[in-house]
Image: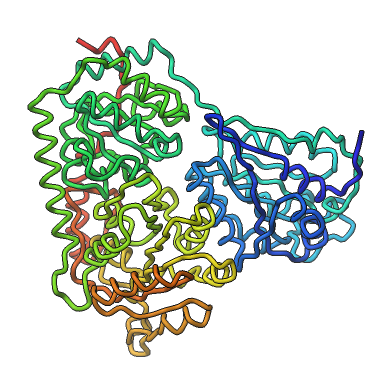
Length: 630
């Protein structure tokens, strides 16, 4: 039996029938579609969604920006542990290419999103079509080919029957924990409207099982032998711990063995901050405890982390000769730093390690050292979070006030600027979904769309976005969408009139402040070093339908947060911060190359210090082999 539908209508029917399942829990894989309609999709996918979407339980949402809607989908997917995501449709040309940054963010962070960019006419009769790229020698090239390097799966549907093989492959990639990322089906606008006799079987309900690969038993035994032989082992927990729901498994392993563990940005919150073996954040934006343990560690057990530059502190976090065990569902990540590779689901791997380590505990002296370092670190965090009495308050005290007021179970969201480094050190998360900082791509503008995505993913959870004014100015338009969708969302806008994180980095590199502060152009110098631009963020947010207030003090901030919770809806709280009080680096380093030649002495002296740090980089990690165990 067949059903005659257009390509777009068939796509909508197919998506409505797809489910994911893990551990016996089944859910809709694509619970909705975000779309901005225009030339290229309004008469194709738009028509199909209007006619069939609601009846199939596939609602359509309207954002204000195509990049924003991909961020919404990515944040939704992250909060749902990558078991659900949204589809996003956009018009030909700029509408579709606006999704490129969102696609890159999703792929870098291994988050599933389904993107449906519109494309030029497959017939090529209207050629060049409005908003189409005209290339002199490649007539099949379109701007959508830009999606290829930032996607995990890309295909152009130039004939209706190609959808029959493309759709199952797209769903497979979306639900594969190792391969997932941006999945792109490029849809020529004429093909979207073409009819075809589709087999009924295409629209039958299908369940995609999200796999939990188990580790090889002999490799688990080899890993256990390495841990038993180590004097100073340290676990690094990454985002894979949270996505796999392995927080309890990590807790059980740590409690049974005394093994200390540290956190990456993506892994923060997998285990509550006050667990006795939790040494806190590690690496370039890490804390005292984890960084000191890492420098002296003889064995690193990297669980569910891709071991990015910030985790390894640009390969200065660990001592030369350190051995590494990599437990990761992605083979590429499991093998990094010469690791003994356990290619497996994080929960399955941790449970297997716990079984193989039965009866083992770390040395009592090492356990005591871990405890002492934790106490020192927690005291340092307390000091940074406290009210220093300055006006305006420090960013650290603002973070502490927000955390104390909303608690450790509300979700805090951030992505870029100085805030992620301060949050990973100072925020005290008490559950795996209480901390949501996008730091794989660190994309300015992600924060407010992400807040909306999390609010939709778990409507009963309190969601607070913390964002700097620079990032706020890039993509605040989704406040309008949040108002339209009647969600509860609080935005704490930290106002420092600058791209302050990069200004700070710029000056640490020896250069004076240049073009990062929000200032008028100065006619005398020709540079942007004139008076500060006077912006009223409160009026701006109110103009987009949000409740907005300015909080001059920590007391004002606390009251505004409590009022937002009581009233519900979308609230923006504007908080000025003191630029002079910054959270310190806590014995960390990040490789930012300094100009090798400069007439500026501050740059030259910084270069000399930089070359000293380079001497601490471990440029090669030899393979960790089980026969090294003595």
